[in-house]
Length: 309
Image (cartoon, rainbow, N blue to C red; front, side, top):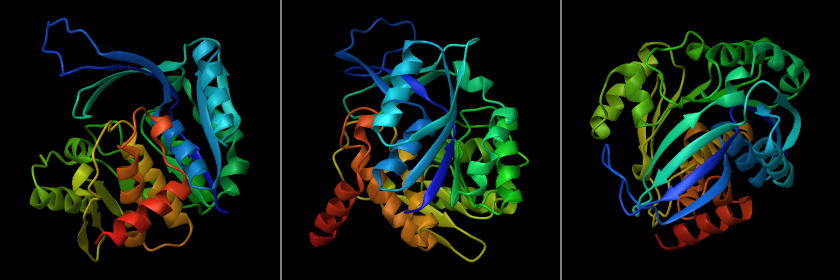
């Protein structure tokens, strides 16, 4: 069993299902409303736990009902929460999510306590980072905090997988120190200025990320799979066909699956193939953390899918 530390955001997702996305200035009746545990960091931590690995989550919640519920859910999911800090000066982060009938979503985030997760908080978890097999990061917390976490990981020679979401318009100084950078199409576009319309433009964007300092790039392409790019090769790994119910957390699940497989010694290509299955299975269910698959579900899904080929 590998030990992974995930540092990042934790939110309560406020989810409304709609027949279609509202136009600017339009009032539209929703079909249903749910409160579901989420946040990129927490989603990835829960995925790691459900994939059978040991995981420590470092994050920050407010001293409120949402924070209590989210902590309870993390513990129930098998995530170690010893380094989830409570902030009396800010509310727990929330994400307002609108999902249409095709499973596509739009997300608006109020960071709350996530925005107060500091380098000092990360410093208290240094011994945990030092004893981990891999560090998993995202960009829903302050960049200075991500930067410090990367520095600590390099100090202790711990590999880093960074999910490049949400999008940032500049290339952070710490990205060249990250072992694997995993943006989606919008995030890659924000970092490179290249609009991704097809596989050809995705390859150009991935190559530019390498040129400006990324070591290895795994560019998430949604239903089309992922693009693996290193200094030696650029390769498209096709996606797995499924009926999408809700794409929320699919990218988070993919990156967590990638991290788990990579930490277990799989080649980068093998890790991307595994991550594709984890991400694909996630979109077949509704909600962020409720949709995250277990290792048994993933292994059965792989067996069934390969059996049909």
